[in-house]
Image (cartoon, rainbow, N blue to C red):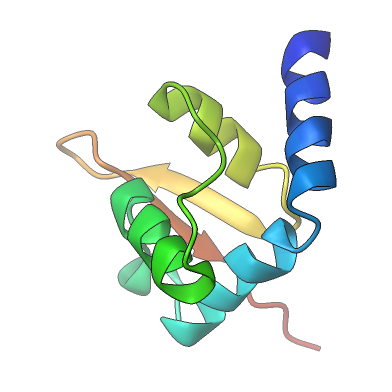
Length: 93
């Protein structure tokens, strides 16, 4: 796993705002519950729209998903047909 950790570290160094950008995507789309979750392709498209850059995580779906799950409060589930959907967990006090 050290290889992926190194890769993610380099991505964060090259794109220091990536975590806040991704969280902003979830907040803009009001994705704070499974009912309003986004797919990976929607996240990539929203990232490009927000930053005018391609989503910097390249590779297989599992690499992109793994990276997104390193961001605090990001959750993922699979629909009955296997589509991965993500949302930001909204904490209540």
